[in-house]
Image (cartoon, rainbow, N blue to C red; front, side):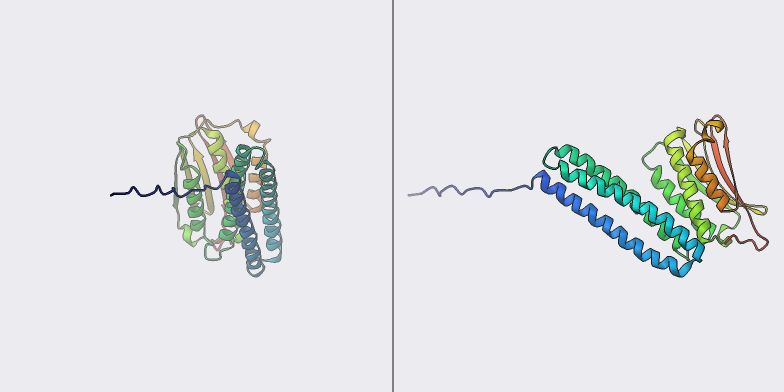
Length: 258
């Protein structure tokens, strides 16, 4: 006679609770931040062998302040996250999102530093390619169409480490401003040798700006300061529609900036 086999209990599946998941995410982000510190220490050693004492001290000071500030913010949000894990997991997740944003900015800062220190990427064409990659990533999720072009034999125009760094940060700031404020549809980054000058520019077809209002802003002061350190001149034009940022650097007799 057939006997029905006894019912077998189903295996229990235990899912980790949200606190466990959040703790692991915090740990991963903090490990990432620790890795950035190690990268910074390695890059700092490269500075000691590649640049003059004056530039080495300035770059070390700039990046030390920036990295220190970002790590402090990450540490603060990590502490706030741990405080909210049991009280309000949704708030804790929001803080994790802020940690992620600042960790991404930290990574971008380190990437810029390592690029600037690379002696094999020392001409103006390499600078254009770095900014082109940055612009394509920055505008990828927007409605802005970004493009870059060059002319005039840029691969033969060498840049010093200081020149690379200031031009990179100046035009990255300019692109961020376009994304946040311009309402543009088209953005063009250009680099060229025109006569006896190296000309780098960023233009857009957006709403333009009020030159008197922008002259008081910290962003323009920073750009003017960087242009002055390059030994160049910056010009900001606004037409309605459209705006343009242009930096001109006179070429020495040998045709090399660096």
